[in-house]
Length: 145
Image (cartoon, rainbow, N blue to C red; front, side):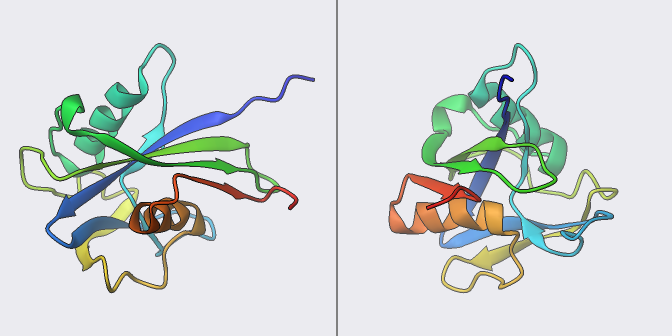
């Protein structure tokens, strides 16, 4: 059997000492929890192109790939979900004002102080945010120690 993993991309949009988060709207256990703008890598798409696409699709901003900096990778396995590798990028430069472009998937967008993030973060993106804040560039979730 060949193990396959999804590749997710996440973007930390930073405005000074604030981070943009979206509150997820879904029919699963993550409904109402906070998340980063993120999505899956598509066939034939580079990782940086996926980050740019997802940021535009979800929050309406345009990012130059040259302004993205890789800050964390996470290898995640959870029962009942596909295994995945998450790549987290930060940027402090973009054009356009962030707006909720996917109200069917997100209740709202909100800026949070990096020193006072909500406790109700989805654990997977929280690992990437924590990695960014601490300089830890890799984490695993769900794997045996």
